[in-house]
Length: 172
Image 1: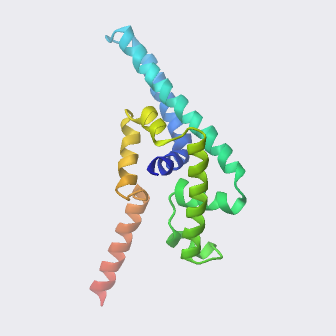
Image 2: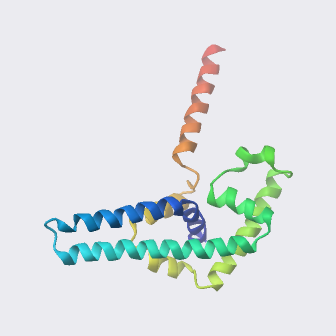
Image 3: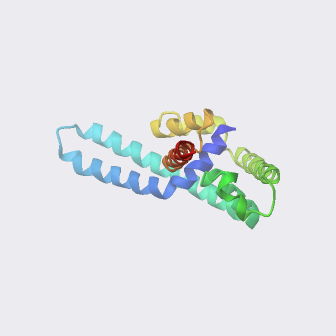
């Protein structure tokens, strides 16, 4: 299910998200002296605090879940889903083939999915909690399009590889 991939992906961003949400909450508080009505500012603050609390809840659930995994399983989930590092980038560090890597990672992912769903973190829960949050929807769209690894760094690496390839073609 996509919501499990998104939750794992969000877990990797939580430290930054916590800081950003805290900064936004503080900024809303400081800007409360502006011409906006108190009810508008209060609603904005409540929404940001709600988002922060959901993020902190996810952080606790995923962290506790990862602690239940053995070291190898934790490493696979961390690399594949949380840090979005593909097999090609880490194959020299792994003692097994790509097929074994993907099979093991998929098995651990299914175990995590089963755990989360059985503890109430279903697709419906996800939609209810995150359905109106634009930045989560953007991540969800990336996952659905299969572009989970399309981070800025990956795109930069692709451009460098293309440039090197083009340079090699021109020099031949």
